[in-house]
Length: 406
Image (cartoon, rainbow, N blue to C red; front, side):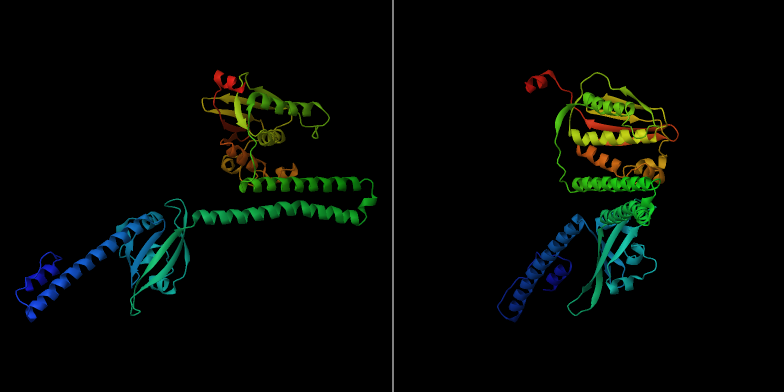
């Protein structure tokens, strides 16, 4: 029994005490053997649970840190290390407040309060990450606190979406307030007697009509974006010869500049076409893609100098067809290029509002092009103009495809 006790102490449960009689020593020997078997089973169950726990921790999408009763980290899973951008040896036995970068809070206060906090990982060492940290105590049956568990959940994208929504609401409020304030001022002036003045009244009424039209355009744009965001904007796709399609759109702009329908009679422009003669068949929603090209063409006209040339090109490679529209305007600063497709973003806010822009046209264009599995981007040099590119998926049609049509 003494040898068996030493084996058990070393973790070896394979040997058994030999029983020679059924007296008290024999009964004690049997009890000893039963105890050995039970300890072995308990150890196996404990090891199995530990392996299961390790597997769960290693495959969790949340970060987990466990501490002792003093608030020092004793266990950390791989996801927590990834979130915090540290190594295990840099975390183990360190105060959890220090690990989380909380300089003004002690580990004991952090654990005892069990507050849910938001932790921002230093953006100087990596892309900014926002983590939600929740704490719970580890208690024994007697109620003694032996440590705590901290769960880290990545809320970076959620926080960005919330900030984006708040910014969007703020922008909508601001954009609607501007024309409404203008309307109120002109209507008050008309109500106070300006309507009797034949020189002033028509001008005031024209302004109110322009501001009303601007709000209607903005609301229509917002509804379009809302339908796209909710996925209820249906695509009516058909195969179209993009060369003919773009020519048709440009013919309308040529006609505008040649007729009295051109509202801005001082602004003259020329459209230079470099489209080629090859038929480029692509599958598009013609109404939505016409909206995209109209928007870019209107911007090119707005920001081009009087007498400027707008160059429209069509090129294709094996997998894509690319439409580019270039103007000779003021150009877009390099720092603004990555933001021009954001909702309500304007490079020159005063000038854009004066020309009736809603700040949503390029955002809608981006959503439409991406719904076609395409891409839209811009290149620009200040003082030399801008070029907008639309890339759409393209698969050259063969003679067999033509026969299929028949």
